[in-house]
Image 1 (cartoon, rainbow, N blue to C red):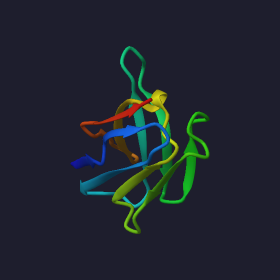
Image 2: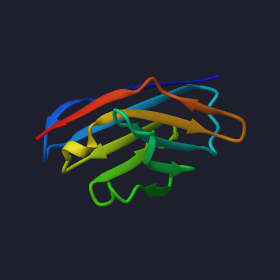
Image 3: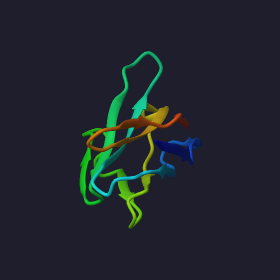
Length: 115
């Protein structure tokens, strides 16, 4: 089993920054995809950023140049550095871990950006 624990959400003013963390525990495969998704009220969950095998990164167009995804060397913790935050970034952010056999979600952390 893999467990994910997220932290770092909160309330910030527009233009500010937050850093989300997601620690994975359990049997972690070194070949994995870890990422962040978000869901705003009344909207579907959407991809924010993913990192494959600790180095290949992909971002949603809406966050390119503002958000950075990274992992620790062991590829067991994934971070999302969010800069220049906008009110439209307000959502519940979910961490995701995937390998060849498992697809695991965190409990979500609220990010609220005030204008």
